Length: 452
Image 1: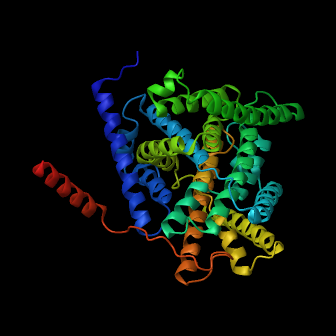
Image 2: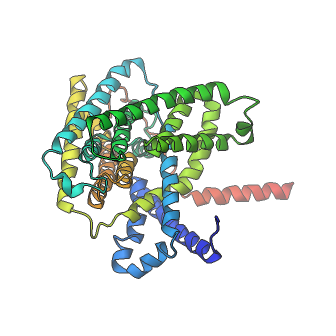
Image 3: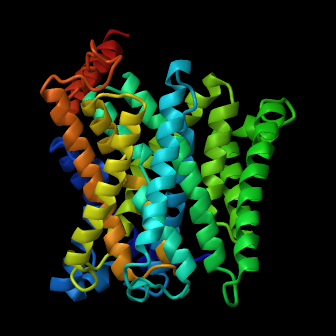
């Protein structure tokens, strides 16, 4: 029980090490080329997965990732933990603070970028043959929700990283986008929770089963946030809370896993529990504790579990056999134009200039991490098949690339990104070799030891 042979353990560790190393290497290379890191991390799975290695050298692929019966399940566990931690970290990035004068922009764009693209996505499902993309759950209603979300979703982690790389995270524009995307995505995650709940319902889809799934999902979201605010406010920083005193990070991870498990038992996707714990922590715990939590969780998550999650997403893709380029291009064009036109004219409605409106439209088009999460959750729930899984992942990657490239172009031309950012001075990003800094610090430490 709970045992692996030394050969099996060694085999799993070497395969995980190769996948993780390539994810970091390609992620680093992508960043050096001004491409979102997530594209490089997913590419690691494409290189080592069925798309390339498995296509040209199937024996090597099978040996590397299916060397013993439990290996695929072990990667599946790492993948799920990575997803849970990604959603927890996304919750920790949730923003609700902005200037009172910006409330109109936030409210209009949240409504416009959520309701209208979602409605357009829902309508387009009547123009395509859904059967070609249905997964094992065979649920048209859940698939329609997933397609609608795919048109509307925006990525907080990717767009935040783009802003950091460009040195404009302190700008009015960046703060507004992050706030809008945070509220916007919460609404869409509720919709995805309904889709997975409906897909997991045994028996035919009826109005009763749909409303039951909606009710369970919404009640779970509301009650979890209320309970977490009470827990973090009243019971966390207490002398009698021995788990918190033993390990602050262990305490929060315990809550993440318990709430995620509860979500799973209620037939609400487990990742939503992790997301809500992150949001609850962001809204409730003192800033000093929050910074300590964020720093510790981000270090372990983004060095191990999250890159591995994105790499395994690449492993799941088989673009050589299960990808339709023509449909992907059509879907990409529709999704990009729908979100761009809606956000652009919503900005014009509140009297923003044309450039500002287009900047908002491009930023809200970055689907990144949440787009990939949408695809993996829908695929795991049996809502979509492998062909549409590939389409959604590629949509998330390409739109993130578009957004980053456009904003970089605007800044390089010296154009104003939006009113209020006329005198914006981008932060200086440290692009020189970190190895030089590390060697210098080692020399300083050695000198101190010698003098001592």
